[in-house]
Length: 229
Image (tube, rainbow, N blue to C red; front, side):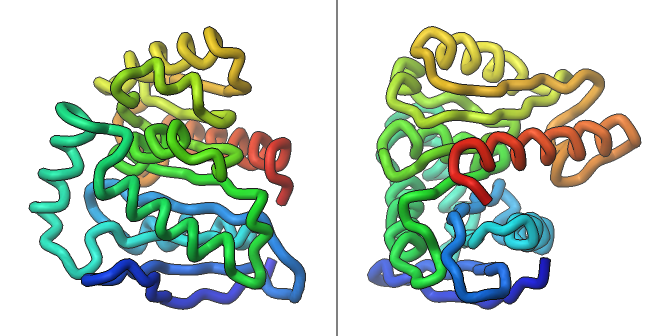
């Protein structure tokens, strides 16, 4: 599907946020997807994933959570809050909510059909965000950490999650699936054998490539069920 892309500025005080926005060509409205980067920031890989969503029929916005800031300081603050303090209401979550304010008001976006996908840090943000913002209809975290307390997952939207077997986040996936089941939240959680962290972003071999391909297919199916596209 033909798409258009542009760099956008999202009003957020000083500094403003920036993002990479990809749209399917045409005039109608599309479901929206927020793409949340890992610790490497808004790099070419995240932009490529954003374009893939647009090619699949979604209005996709990748937010640069480090825009105008020191990346190492941001990472320290984000991970401290995520792992030690308040994983549900820190600066990263607030920036994502501001980004969604921008996305849902865009003339080409169906603001009541919104999803999010995130990787490592971004996947962890996606889960925590879903526990505090009812505007999200579906999320797709990869190799993520769970919110604290994990009982907050009771307020989450439907989840399609992917985890590597050979990674610390494997146990996070097991616990996440148990909590989602406990609260009857629709979900598809899968742990991929013989894979390591970042298997979707940078597949190392044919096994990881197969896992990346399968996880993408699962996301497309799950997103279609919950927000169309």
